[in-house]
Image 1 (cartoon, rainbow, N blue to C red):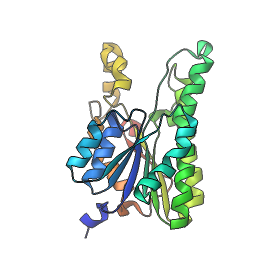
Image 2: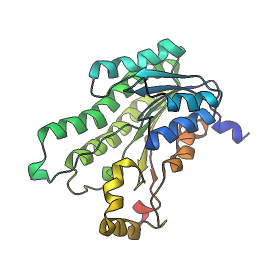
Image 3: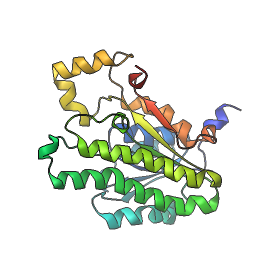
Length: 253
């Protein structure tokens, strides 16, 4: 009985940021749990994740979606439904980072970070909601950050965007919970991905971070597999508007 709660057989999941890092691990985890996958990615030529999903016996389609192209973003969810006939799960895992002191932070960097991290998340949620609300079911998983709680240093756009993702999640949850559409947020801590390479390679900063994490080490993309399957499955049917931290205990310290 309990295992059935986490099965995703017959479900269709759309995932952004699926070609590497956390998004890739989440996409594979959903397929391992039984879901068919729509990979929303910029380059249709990059097929390694598709092949891995298909090797698990699941159907997988690449939907071209450059997050810098707003028309492609608006058309992504309708394309998923056209290919599969349904959408049951949306994971917004894509995100970018730009670093600069606030007084020098370039306007174009601000716009790019807010557009990709927040605006595209909003549009994809809105488009998914147009199908999920009428069908009275659906799971939306957004990715926020520790900077949804903290301001960070030299990352004003990233902090603003991830704070916005958390608030957007709550706002959508307030409207859509009554329609059995779950909208929740995963909050990664310090994870060993390409985005954090500079911090990992900075011995002083790396030590400061590790000293602050109760678990004592950086997280891995694979650490999000179980969390994502939980929020995508029937096991989380009464979880709405939640921010689930996967941070090695950082926020609890």
